[in-house]
Length: 116
Image 1 (tube, rainbow, N blue to C red):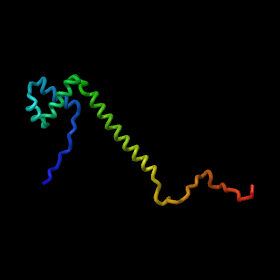
Image 2 (image 1 turned 120 degrees about the vertical axis):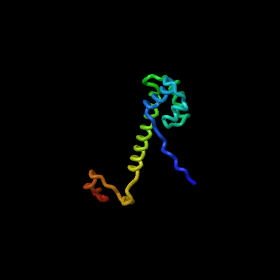
Image 3 (image 1 turned 45 degrees about the vertical axis):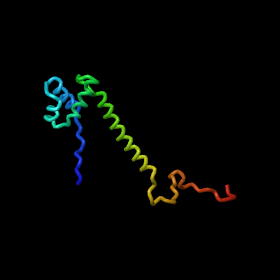
Image 4 (image 1 turned 180 degrees about the horizontal axis):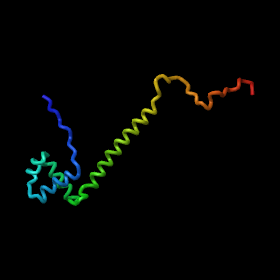
């Protein structure tokens, strides 16, 4: 009996700030707010802890989220560059054993032995 995993939800910074504000300024318990929003109670506790650490202003948690977003972007870019590099390293299978002439040297011939 296999259970299918739900895809991981991602929430915007604004959504997190509003959820935390609901529990701090709205007078709603964390458990009730989590049920109302349809998220896990521990997730909301983690968000509260993060915003307590960085403050709950308009830029709350933005630095950390932007670092995470930048890290994701750089990882994607690195994977793409590696893929391009690996593609360029490979020679087509039809080229195996064939000499590749450059257009510069195409018409030039080596003089025969003893001729100059």
